[in-house]
Image (tube, rainbow, N blue to C red; front, side):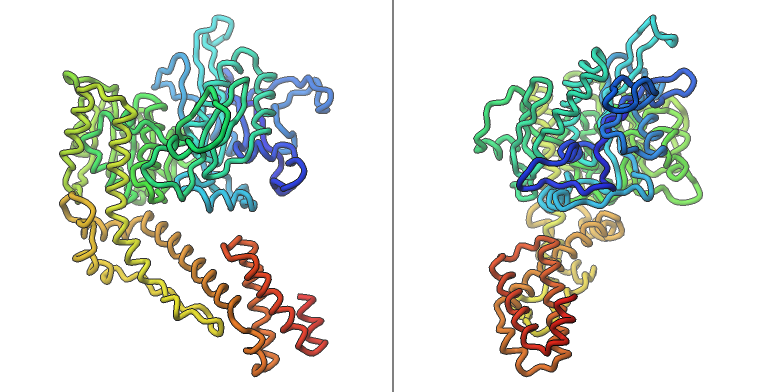
Length: 593
């Protein structure tokens, strides 16, 4: 595996200064962690491809060396091994020619990297599904396998892999389509040139349409923002940008063709939505890593938008994965994870899992794609198991027959796949919004009233989330106000409360409310007459106030709270005036701290 890696984050902080150029590889690492080439070694299998160095300026001429930019950065051995094994389709897939797919791996313990200011700002402004992942790497693979009589094994087998913490599946696969064929012909010089071009790209900024030059082509893409109107086309949102026309426009950085992904399981879309909402353990077994990874990504990133899918997921998973034993043990319940697999061996291994989706080649029944059936888990016994959804799960809500009829009619009328995908995406979005709006409304009621926030006391507490209290609100403010779907909504909420997705959602909302309280309290403090207040206070109380004000000002600036700068400066001036009114010895202590 050749590695073209980013600069050492441990050794220097990455930054985008307002004046002066960025440090080498800073811009590259805003998009990618590294670029890897995985090849097949007759003795080792998938392995790091070692080449003899040629560059005198690098100081390693004539020595075996993986290509690394710069040379001082390394992935851990565990991460390298995972990348190697996941960058080739397993032997059961029979992939000849060019194949593209995705994977996701855990970062090694002790190797997780804290985010810098720019990355934190990106995560604050990006939709939850596009936030930079602190604990995992995404891998985007372009694999080529062709007959080659000059190779002992009879086949040329190599993968070009992009590793990133950004889930930009469409952008990075489009980049691979440009780069990989050229690389397989020209090798390292081509790859080095591409990495240098990526290092000139502007940083990804939510809400901005960017022009990204590479190999003589300009890729134009818009980075979505959390403030975007949901359900609106990214192209429509970017049409006011004054940019030069670009020959390669990518409509969306991450949204897959949902209709194609779900084509054989369209009539079960309601069940899939519920399984993702509840964070149920699911196996997706497909005939190729492309289908497996696209289906898993479609399920986890699009089914319950705008909710974050808070469980683990692996678009492509093999028996060599470092979590294989953890996920296949029968001594405990299956974990909340969605796994994409292609090896039939997994049918036996995962027999104890509650939900297995077996997808075969799409077959037509007349004008329509044949839909797989829901089957009992007990029938999942043999390696030649037929396509189907093997589960005993009963949906809480009834199927939306009108949606299914509309989609099937669209197939008969040869409606474009992009239009069918828009219909599916809008249905899932509206369904999730109908489910989440009552929760959002109730959580908003837990916030203290603004009039109860005063400068002279700590901010009031947020009221606790009481499930039964929320349930009572469903009678008059439930999903029935926005959704026509009938069924056991109450039962669905009760099950949702036990899922990691509820825990993740509520934690995020609670943090947002705490942040809002902090901002409101800071604004009240800025407007208060602090000088009048301290006149009647003891020195101990005044020192306590100064320390609290200083802490709040530091927090406001470090976390970039949206408070007007003139208000913060006013508070800072008040604080300095108060300190100057204290005895000299206290002034010295407070100025020192």
